[in-house]
Length: 143
Image 1 (cartoon, rainbow, N blue to C red):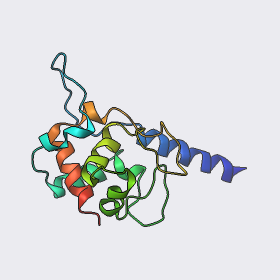
Image 2 (image 1 turned 90 degrees about the vertical axis):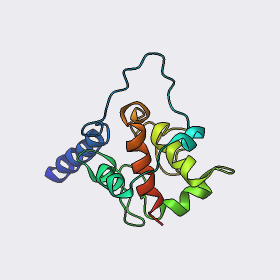
Image 3 (image 1 turned 180 degrees about the vertical axis):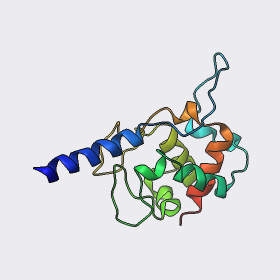
Image 4 (image 1 turned 60 degrees about the vertical axis):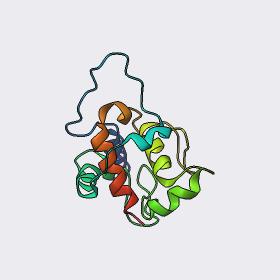
């Protein structure tokens, strides 16, 4: 009985962590600003993979739900080798565009064996363009 309760608490904790926004995301307060689209990845500035890694590993962020170890499933799929895998997910879509879409519109493509609506769908608003570029630079380094 204790094991079931403990396991349930871990699952609830992981789901709660994955639903929390990044530590200090800037809010977009400009009126009538369109939500970013996956096709707009060319308008991003150059990303910094080191800052992206810091975002990925920040408290309550990506690493709470995504492992970097191959085959390790947390709440979301493992991101080991995602730079290579991302290019194969959607026909005609580059790895960078797929990764961007997965961050800002996580239900656009749901990896097999995972449920939709588990990942927070507000990162398009909560991440600045620079944070998104940094996170993408880091993810693109995971070959």
